[in-house]
Amino acid sequence: MLNEIVQGIARRLNAAFGDDYEIYQNKVEQGLQEPCFFVAVLPPPQPAKPLLGNRERCLNAFDVHYFPRQAGNNAELLAVAEQLLAELRFIELPGGGLLRGTSMRWEPVDGVLHFFVNYNTLLNRQEEKPLMETLSFEQDITEKG
Image: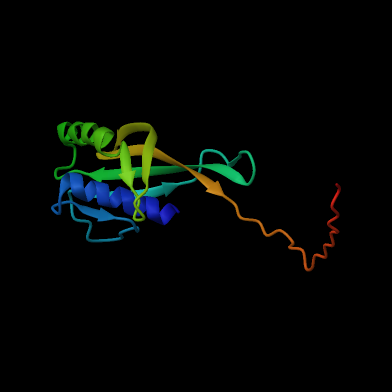
């Protein structure tokens, strides 16, 4: 599910900012081409919360880094932060489902914008139950009358 959410974020970023912005999902040692985004999956803020039946509520936290065209351009960072607040409110998963972004916040750190967002999901755990092997049933029909 996390990979599908990352793909949804990447598609939304591409739709909003266009092909001039690279979107990375893996760590880049060299050759980072600014302006660009890096989508990082963060550890969940809390374990999955059990719900009724076999369902669990999972909090999936992400940090979308934005590397500006010019280092230290705070105006560009602020403009992108405002745009991300609107653009990442909803993302579409590859299967067609929509997820709402929650707990959105941002902060610039050392010239890089960090945009934090959670996409919460419900997980339905399938558990195998033993099936009956055979069943015998007999019934007499009598007429009262």
